Image (cartoon, rainbow, N blue to C red):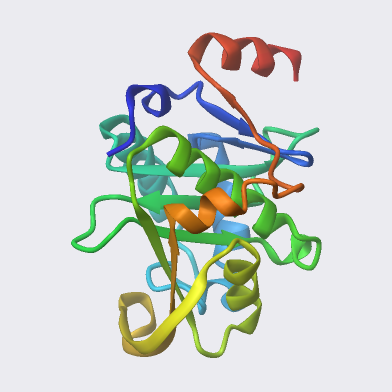
Length: 211
């Protein structure tokens, strides 16, 4: 479970190029356009293609409720200079039977720039800094080497392969599975591109006003 610090919608994570914040209803159109693109949706288990606009609104409401409950931490990925412009999302789910799970997606116009890695590292840092969690899990479709590389650059180690449920894709699909524990994370805290600045409610309000 995430602490009270992250359960307020003014919570932010700041990196060199990115501004991570709670999703907003105003993000729905960008979610439909970017997450609903086939090449993005096909690599996920739950994003439909095409993406119905009302489903995007439901996602935003569900994400905000999960954040407020501390069951998940779902953050909109935005450019630091344009915090109202959603370009993807990154999340850690604690409401799963296994260890907490990292997941993300990024719109295709922003691929190839290291932004997914930068966003994921920031949330990973927050998870280990703000919770007592001992490990994180993640998975990537075997046909998605780019996602696998992102996870490896974030410090995850490959721990095997198997089948996972992809409801939006119609059933079980083969995936590669990854794991990152607290000890390894501590040895990698010098990540230069993470360098996040966490904001509590008061600090976040000041930073949001500045942008």
